[in-house]
Image 1 (cartoon, one colour):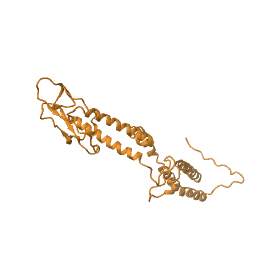
Image 2: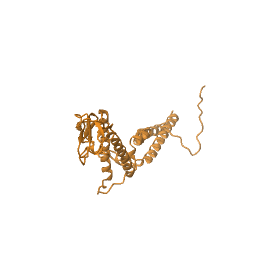
Image 3: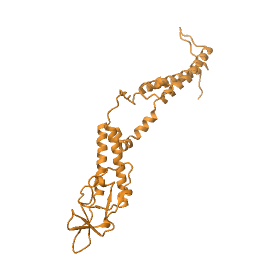
Image 4: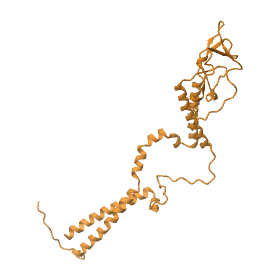
Length: 270
């Protein structure tokens, strides 16, 4: 298809632009092109759209793995107390497992522990560092049958019993001896001790009195971003994200208009 150029009369009162004027206008428009482009790209770059998308994609993982940190102080304290209580109950179950007892009959040789099995009191372990495997003792291993003045008529096998100063804190019924713990059970107690130690530290932190200095109100992240010391363009970063988005939209729209106007002017001048 061949295009036919049509020449029309100029309307009265209107002045057509000369080629020189068209060229000067086009050059002026193109001078503004880099500035508008830089403004649009700069505003879009400061929106941190990528970081918002990343936060949304990881919201579920953050809620499940760090729910305590996201809760209020009261809720955090309740959650930590529950976690520590569960660990304490598990330690109690392991340490106070029942030991097998036998009815005393005949003239068997029995070693008797006077004044019960244990001395009063117990030291609280350092839950963050202690290894209960290092403090395990077998005071009755040399006797086949043992008993105490608190257990008339029954005996225990000396090889089934132990004493551990780092688990005595959890001894409940002290009228009976304690069963010898296996390696796996002591490793589990060490793990539970670490949980208890961590929870105690968290509870101390949450129950600590607030600092005396005035607390600075936290800025909503959706509105403004924190200014890093020494960072350039601080004044721009103070602008709310919604306003920056509007600026970017206006800049891009102006850029498109400039491109269209420049093409029209070139076409007319040609």
